[in-house]
Image 1: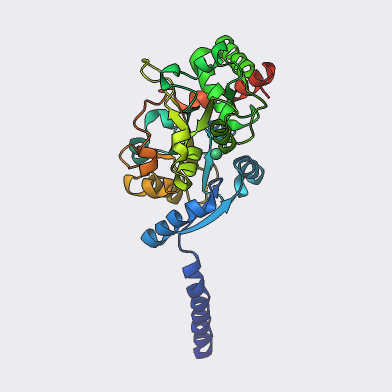
Image 2 (image 1 turned 60 degrees about the vertical axis):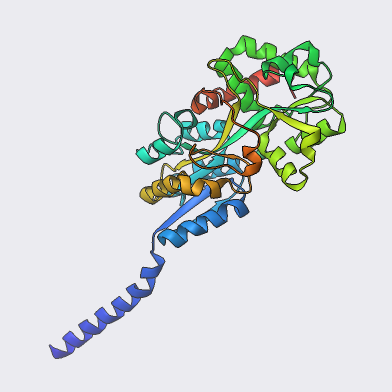
Length: 341
Ligand code: FE
């Protein structure tokens, strides 16, 4: 009897020994699949770990690949959070059932209603404005007004545009579809193509340089690429200037795309995922989330980088990001139809 008791207690001790080291490893973990630039996101996530003790596993890849991976992994996916860019991608991730509905008054308060999913599956985390840029020595801002106006023959041979194969062009077209419907948007897209100064571009920075080099006079570009150039070369702002599109008309505004995130459908730690997204959207953390990106914070109480602030206030399109995102498949077909390469 005595011997049995000893064996039993020895057994308990060794069991306790086995549990003890693994206890540290089971500290709360949140796994993120993100298409955001790792060097920019990592310091913010490290700060979260310092503040909360929650360990973050970060997997970075292209947005499309991450959605494919989530879909393929299904219920066995280790991902708790998906962070990606573009409202078309966010809408599509939700549509494919890769994200779950989350009830969060905090996220709803931090993120303006037009920059989040009405079905509460994703929220914008930063704003990526896409607006008009012009060559300061050849165009007066008084000549500029809207994206639609760039389809007017007066801009023939003067327009630089990004390829229609790219999500930024598709989302801008999707916004026009949500606003005007198919027929009018088709006319606009045809007009753009007719006004092109040359081949479409495969990146936004090249379009800024083309404006400066005199290859074209007007373009539609994401503002953060301009911010990156200005950061390195402030005098670039004398050659190429930003114009906020579609201002001063009731119900209209400049096109704002998003980076954003949601809790994955099969999250192992959905609570932790929600808390992390809430933290990322908070006023205190938003400046860090957009730091170095020259995007605008999604939380309207947070301050943007001084370079971004210098571009002034503007009115964003009031259309809901999901209503724009859902038009993206139609936008792709439309661009193809009108010969927008
Ligand atoms: Fe970009």
